[in-house]
Image (cartoon, rainbow, N blue to C red; front, side, top):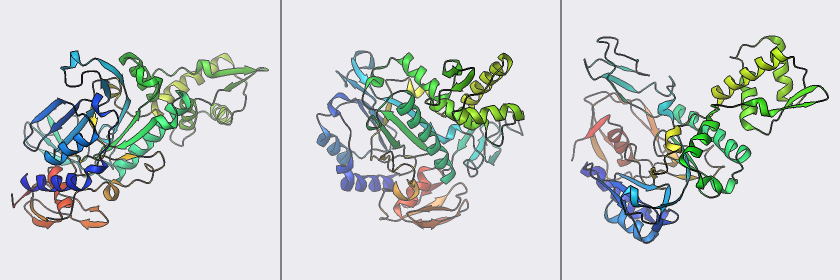
Length: 384
């Protein structure tokens, strides 16, 4: 890993000024070095001290707390939390999408059988459920997670009253995004309150009963709820089969029009909306959202599994953001010669094409490309 350490060190020497964390003295920081050693419960007086630390001790992974503490260096039970950002984690690894996982490689830890794609629930050869997966990263994974970012921004701003100025989007540096609310009343929620918010965003427990409005014998749905709008849109999508009469009523509701509903139709429609809200809800890890002790990547630090920058993005930038071009932060020099351990599919970084490479192949790569295949576990450096 010595060659990778040099690349990370060069990055932090030249880019430390882009590192930004608010309320530095009230945060806990954690770092993992290239030997796997973890240092946490660290605090800094200010941003300049944090930046100097990163230059002097370039880490493989760098994190800061979503919570603000009166005593950030104390053990967890003694930190005295003040408030915590409301964090949502979107990771394409959880989606089990065939196209996203097309080049991922699974291996049975019991018999060694391996294959590509989404791992089976159990090994086809020995029946063991002990699987390990080497995930790859492609454009499909990123586009899937961007859709979930959009859903969260709608829920937070339209349903939960967060100001757009209070919402931040960050690329994690790997297979997804973080969305967070950094200011306002949502940052004072308890863990249980955060769980409820996460479930609402996911469409779990959604009850459209209170969104039905009756005027002159006609029923309308309150479309100010983004969950309700998305549920209607999902019901009208091509892959949802509805009776023509129900589809017509759903279409009218989606246009804000009133419809006549008998009691059986009303019950049927309520159930459809509940199911649809869950199917079309944001795909997030709710356990991350309710964890106020969570540590998250420092903006503009380098992710130790890709070599990509964990970037803070504006609400306009994330939609056009391309991590394979915009998040590549490591330098091209020095080049590193690597030996391929596992199949490497063709990929592009900084508009430059690489691969495909086969196991046993030795290839000289620019630093950022070598770091990518090494950190993905597909190759090892030869000149270390």
